[in-house]
Image (cartoon, one colour):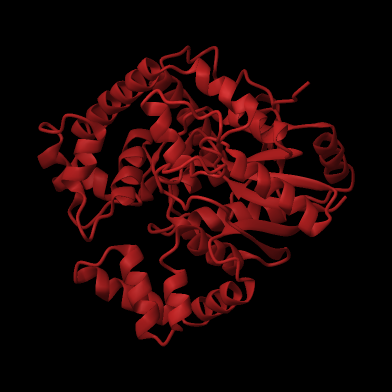
Length: 407
């Protein structure tokens, strides 16, 4: 079986995501669609609105056939680390011939050319980015400016200002075997608030409506709307309060040096957070106090989640600065009949280059070293997520839950 791969968060899954899944299948002509999905914490640096198991079920009910987890270690990394992990997982299955991604431009040639330029100039680019960073530029702004200074085209510079296109370029840079497929994003752009009654809206806009207790039924599939309706605004408010309490405890209990050892730390952020933690009245207030032209909101958000989960360079980065490019295992979150057949083919023909995990209690012994630490961190992250959600840690433990199989 040939499979098309998608890298996603589905936070929450909406009709634009359904369109993307359908287009990935149609455009590639593949037999199955595999989604590499963020776990309980997402790349912008926050807990997901629904846990990874429920979001995996949403994906399967919306057209996906197999859902695997991107480890939290990589979900809370930057765009390059996140993209590298997602691509590595999909290609490691041995059956993914295409990787389909959303793109504001939909211009695959421009995306390819930009990726090739970044790969060819990677050393000089990083040197320029570091120099601009010392002058107060945030990483995204420094990257765009460095790209321009090194002779990148004006069209490519604009490309690197658009979130989905940035990720698309990172995906292409990491692909070794799969063919890239750019699917033009429809409707609201990433991060845009819902402004009209268009069918396709951004996940962030939908989350804002959820927080205000509004109706999102026009923007999400029926099965997702059912889950949204079961989640009241009081529940969302309580989650935010519990998260802030846990983050405050984690920051107060951590030295500035420990905070600076986190992957998104350094440059005095430990002292900056310590100087604001007692005055901040909410998580958003804390992040807003710490952010600046140099330190983006997302970087501070990721840093706080890294502090909360205990993710430091010393513990998880082999060379003291960056994660391993490839996760050490493929963890299955859910599948349908087609996905089950695909998994059987992968196992029977020994196609996967990494261990495929469906039961961590029985298959953890297949792993060693950094892979074990990463899997243990996933389990730990799920426990912390359950604390934030205000539910039983034992009852919702990763040690008890099995991959989703929708009836």
